[in-house]
Image (tube, rainbow, N blue to C red; front, side, top):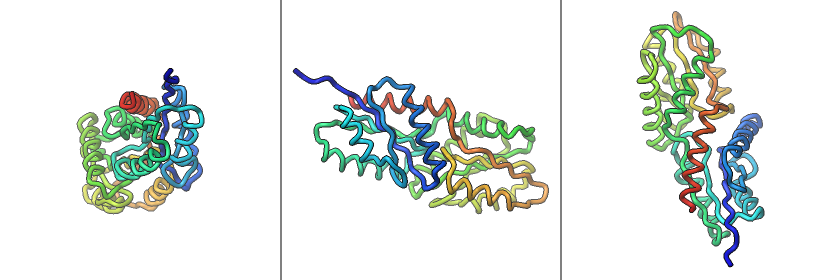
Length: 251
């Protein structure tokens, strides 16, 4: 008689050297578990934090998982999602050949996340000028899909909300850099600039942006740094969608 099937979900966050960022990500993934009915759910991190993916998979197996759906809790489809996590899973599939593992999608371009960006702007509790523009700041990657996706998100934000301009820049590994983006914005001359981080949680990159914005002194221009995406019901809904997809692949 065939044994009972036990579906597990393993959430994979990026990881950070900053304890606050690690704790925020862990809390977010743990809260995401409440939206799903799978009997086994665990969290893990790709790098810099514990538990690792290997530790997460082992924990699922120890709890009786007969199949595992792996859900990357990452904003965009880049090298981490395309290569690093699949490489680790391929290694673990050899260790657990009788445990099928399905792999889900990162958040990607999603209208629910575009709405969060606008909410982060509203959170600043300032009157939005007719002249206002947005500088959307991504983490950055050498993967061209990241630039394509962030530009699509910027286009959706521009189409949905009344800003004069929405530009993109990156904190690492892609052009224009954050500094180049700021310099370009200064030339545009918009009186009000909302700098919106396309980041899930706090961390070294966010703290670096705060320092840069504090040092800015552009005449007749106000730079307003908004909060990162952080916790939001919309993100929980996106995680649920991606989890449902990943579990479905494993059935």
